[in-house]
Length: 458
Image (cartoon, rainbow, N blue to C red; front, side, top):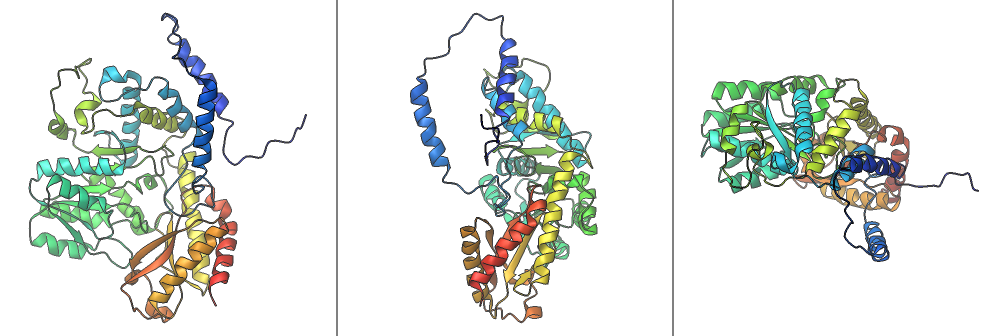
């Protein structure tokens, strides 16, 4: 027998753990009458599943460290197993009688997220993702500040403008500084004009990972009586690590002072899509969710999750996956989970350092979290953008998958490198180094980027 371990890319060893866990789950229903599963043709199922597997090969290797483009991070094996295990029951966390165990697990997991942000008292639940979570936060804000304007930075996620339109709320953008953070002075000038009811602070923009200056925004929100919402869908988990720039650390220290927070466990939280979370500091906002349904009856005197969510049917499997992951990897500073976040940030700092030392590239500001963006040095912005696209293609040919981003030229020191600003925006290269493995792969990533650039640049 060949003793050499089979060479694989995808993790498969955990499948045996799923089978063992299924046996334990099955034993919990052993007092029921025997049930014969619906007829299914194994050969037919095998055929269609093989077709699915072949079609799924038409994807970038999102799970691999050589995928360093968009914010795609593989779920932890224990999250995959727990999610799949729950699928044999398929609980619905809208009402307690639809997902008794998974509803309790959701409340416990959400409470741990709230504690991570600094809240002992809260109201919150899981959502299908950051978009729905932000919608709920702005919906509550609209109930409390009806008809008033929602303001976010011009680097905030585009979903805030869309959500405001859906809710019938006016929406305005506030300029950013040269590091992609909301300009607090510009915000105050706008607040002086009146009419703003809610300010959205972005804790980790999806383009550059920039963190808005929360200490200043908290002060302004108190002074002008506006509601402050933190969109921490990308950066929320970084409150667990201390190795951050001083200004960034101060922003995270003020996170408990906002009115609502959104965090996406399906980004840094090692969860499958879709899993977002909305949190409110004041549990009293639950009154806005109150409803009366003839079939969603009360099986407990406790407030069930269907009473504090705009979504109705919601997958209990998401809660099971999150609860299990947080049980295995607690949300504590200096824990295994926090170390993984730190590894990604360490990788980003290493890549930024190499870009700084290479005359072919013009990196933007130092990374606050784990996202790095850089331009290609050229005589003019237009030529730089064209070269960036070509390097992007050359890197992909060598199995390094980066991302392209179109950003304001103000984010780059064009004057310092003698680049003519013939266009207002520049297409640059971008890496999201959110996988812990990226720290060990920086040499490989850099060597491929170097070869791709050499193939393009004169």
